[in-house]
Length: 393
Image 1 (cartoon, rainbow, N blue to C red):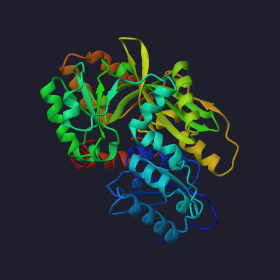
Image 2 (cartoon, one colour; image 1 turned 60 degrees about the horizontal axis):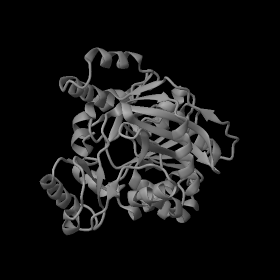
Image 3 (tube, one colour; image 1 turned 45 degrees about the horizontal axis):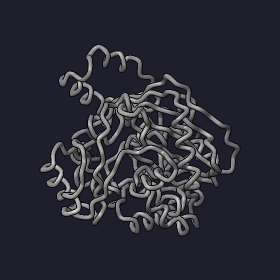
C-alpha cells in the first residue's frame, strides 16, 4: 500500500459505519486524505473519499487498539494526522494513552481527567447534581440485598454505568422492569455482565422521542465554536434507542446553558453530544448521557450549517475557525432503521402513518445514501443481516 505523497495532513477515522462515513465525506469533500480503520465489515471504506482502509482484528482492547494505530500510522506515513474515534471504548483508549499517541498523531480527545466524567455515568450524574443540572433519579445498588431495600416507583430502567460491556453482550442500551420480580431478575443478569456496582437503576421518564433532545457542539476554551440543538424524534429500538433514526434541528436556549455549564466544569475540548429528555411531570430537561465524540446523526450539522468534523480538523491544524450555529428546521433520517421503527410505531397505534410519511418526505438528508458517493449506501443494504447480528443495528 503506497503512502500519500508530500506532507498533507489527513485524518484517521476509527470505525467505519455510517457515523464514520460522515466524517470521511466531510473531510474528503475538502480534499483531506482519510484513513478508515475498523474491526468490522464497514461501509466507509467504499467511499470515493477514503484514501486508505485498514481492517484490524480487534478495536475493543485498549492496548491492542493503541498499538495497532501506531503501527498503521508508521507503515502508511500518517504522522500528524488527526484521530477521530466513533465509539466510547475508543475514546477511552485514546484518552488513557493520549501521551504516547500524541508523539505521532494529533489527538483531539481530552485526557482522562476530563473523560472520566463522561465515561462513567456515576460520575456524570454526580457532577450534574453538583452543578444543579436536572437528571433522572438514579440508584446504584452494590448487590441484590441492597436492591431489595430500595423503594422505587415502577417502571424503571436497568442501565450500565459504563456502556461498553453491557451493550456488546446484550445489543441493548437498557432494560425495562415493570415490577419487583422483573427488577431483581434483570439486575442479577446485568450484574453478571458488568463490574461490581456498575448496574444502575433509574426512573423511567415517560414520553417518546418528541421529548428527547440533544445539544451538539465543537467546544473549546469554555465556548462553542460550532453548535446545534436537535430533537431526536425517533430512535431504534423505540423504547431504549441505541441510535436515533429521525432527528430535526430546533432551538432551545436552556439546553445550551445547561450543557455549557457541564462542559466548562470538566474543561472539555472537542466534539460532544449531550442527551436530554423533557420530563412531562415537572417540565424539566433531564440529562441522560454525554458522548465525547461524533454522534450518529452528526451529518445533520453540515446541512444545518455546522460541519462538525471539519471544524475540529481546522482547529487541530491551527487554522482560524469561524463560529457556526445550526439553523432550526433541518431534518435527518436513517432509513434502514427508521422504516422498521416507523412501521412498529404505526402498528402499535403510537404513530399515524400519514404523519410518518410526511416526515420522510420532508427529510433533508439521509444518513448514508448520497448521489455523489453512492457505493457505501449500496453496500450497506447487503450488510443488513451482518449488522443486525453483529450489533443489533
